[in-house]
Image (cartoon, rainbow, N blue to C red; front, side, top):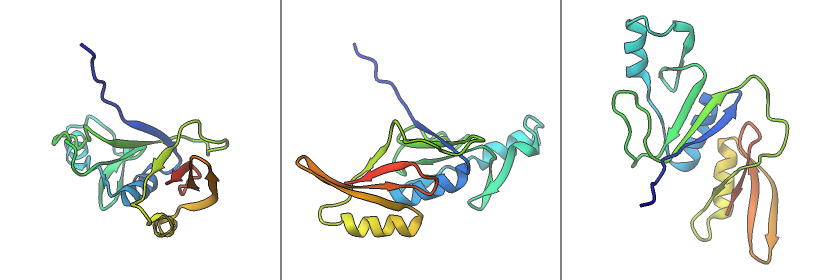
Length: 151
């Protein structure tokens, strides 16, 4: 019997909360709410105040933020998504080279240009349009410069 593995995509970031907010808005996801767990851990003295911040109107981890699909299950105690999920972790260095892995975003038929405009309004930027025999797409970057394709 083949075992199915669960997964999440972890993305290095200089501002994980801004990235989680961008991608949640871009994909129609939710920014995870870890505040009940954080408040409980702070009250118990299990984590220092310095490990937290306020983001998206609530207490959050300083160095981690995630966006999860709204229809997928999540742990009600921690707020952690158990399905389709992007986790952004703070790193000290900025992005300097091309991604080795990227996200493809698929617009509804005939809506690619409107979707590119919407994503640009959220902070993305179009780099170029690619037209090849196998298809056409727009190469874009998110607010921190991570490449993704809009099909």
